[in-house]
Length: 418
Ligand SMILES: *Cc1c(COP(=O)(O)O)cnc(C)c1O
Image (cartoon, rainbow, N blue to C red):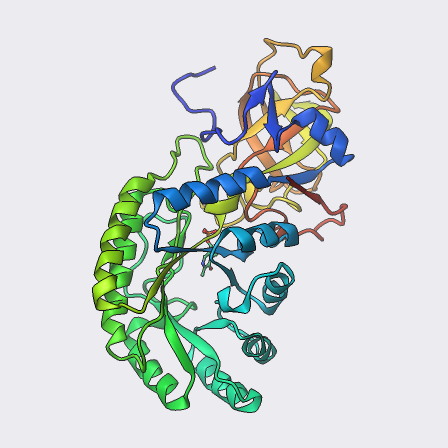
């Protein structure tokens, strides 16, 4: 086995005891017995609470933290988030309903996303949440709805900035984009918003996702703040809310390191101090998805078959890309890389065979070469039929971001661990 090459991304969120991960305080083999069947996702609420607490102590106190629900919309998890963070960001009327059902106050919900349908806008205005307007059409429709409902829609303008978040997993700004309104068109939109009597509250500038470079995030936040200052000159009223986006990434792949928070905190301090003077009514907001929940979740599968093919060993498991598209490498990755994956005996009490290290690939049951959960990983334990395979960093963009109907296999379970 090579030692120079990191085997997988850093795994520090779950302790290992007797060779198995302890998830939500329960060793893997016991957890599997409790859940009763595989495959399943498990989300550790303690780990989520710790992550939010860590962010709170690391970042300037005045900054609001929002949870971007599309990362994981499981009702119980959203209910936990509604208590832990300052707001929920939804991306559809369906997510809005979940946020409300989870107990979030409408004052603390915002809605972003291109192509909001009229019925979604109606529902959002009726609920009294903040709408991030992404086009002139949306603003005009909102004016009609406001008149009909006799209440002004609360709006912020989602800006497509004239810069991008460098070295991001997913770029969502700069150049032509379907998200938001190009910065150069925003003054005209602000004038219309003023004339139409919508309740202007501020700006939403989201530059990109999955970034592990503090310097890139700092640069995007500073540019976003400068842009908001310029645009505020054309606003019909004072800026009350300035959402600077997020983009905080988590380590998924071999060689990746955790995001360095202190320099980001320092830069945010400087922005907050300046905003105190130049945008005194503005609440600064960061909206994060995967950074809050991604590392708190695992996907657990069981080995169904063990095969040799022309010199390679394949473990076929009972879960796959239909539950976890991202781990299969088909959710926006340019080059397929392995999520952290570990293999464990189903009955660790029987004494696992130590020293049986091997290189294996883990594949799912779907009849497509895309259904690969781990490509030639080095495992210290040679998994047998009935044993368990754990995929880490699975708390975000897992079950809800996968093609569950593809090949008509059973749906996954999702367990929320206290
Ligand atoms: C997807 C999305 C997020 C969350 O992104 P993460 O990478 O999960 O942090 C936040 N804001 C907007 C507007 C998004 O579209």
